[in-house]
Image 1: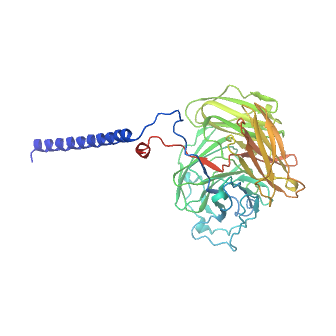
Image 2: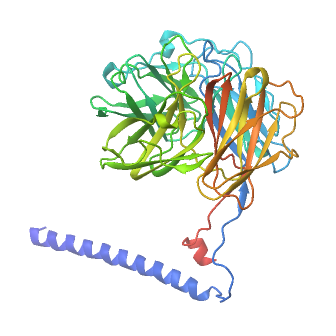
Image 3: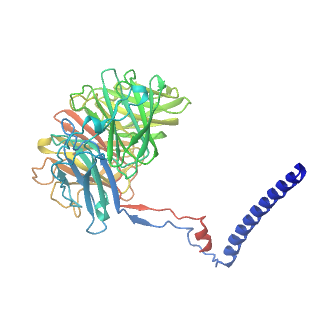
Length: 514
């Protein structure tokens, strides 16, 4: 075939393809048009397309990194749920373990009592051999990485999944952190120093290997050099990374854990000494132009705000305090200018001893935490993270009462007045049917509500359910756990839904065809 004939043949082939594509497009347009003509149309004053309505939550999956690890970190769990869809459902607790790990001496037996507070002790898992635990080091050898025993997967089905909250407890029975849902994007913001030890826990609750990456930004900018990426987390296993060496020079640090394949539960533990308990950091809110940090305690001590600006543009940040005396901008909280790609610490000593919440607003997305004095031995302080406004209800499975210490709720209404119902129950008492007490939070203010067990209960832990009432303005809540005059933890009270609402799909082929 000559060159000219070959060129003409290619031209005809290309033209045929274009004609075929045009005919397919015309056929689809005709199909939609014919369907819209044949479909009966009635003009009424009825509302436009409605949502599909609320659907009951019927499954939940959480991961807890500490129980089963033994030593300073191991301990039990507290679980509570608020089923409204009738009886039934089941909660199962399963240890994570890499393939080939030695089995536990005794099978794990955790009672399942949906609608009640259940406290369970978790035995320490057998330790892994060095050969089985070994994994490649990451970030050019700066990040020792290995598999670990311990950690739990908590799954619930049916009504038992509604309003489910699970918290891990220290060996002394004190709540240390909330168990988290698996996901693909986690943010942590934390103070740093050459003396701190920082460990990252990555738990895979699914049946396929997850691939994770850790991005680091400090007060010196983004971490450069060999990235901490391609971390393979085997199914139903937990990987621990020691980030201390890589983060030693940072005073203000933000970590962004993402996955390109699969999901993980990410958790960070920070301590001033490897032989001390330290704290589990709360997950920070994703970067946004507005967020609320609830739970400032009345105790005195440091008040340091850590703000991360992940983008390249400079941030103009305003800090607003929501206190029992009203809303105002504290000294040092207005006109804060921060450079992009930096994580910065800002001291706000005027907030010491003032309970309430902070509202952080900025012209570009940022994420922030507040560090206050307190915590168990080895803690660099207590870290308060942003929290969403309560929707439907919030459940806290473990609040210290009696011999375990005492606790209180700090409730803040940054806008309109809020009204909530607070129910407190101890183990063995059904949550359903409890009347609780109604509390009002004035507009643009905060209040403190002590948590006390009902009656003359001798229980050391109680579950708390906070429900916004009809007509309530947005309310942000956190639980402050105390031992004497020392704050042990501040736990955001997040939405614990019993149902979800699916939006109506308007532009699908099935909708057009009726």
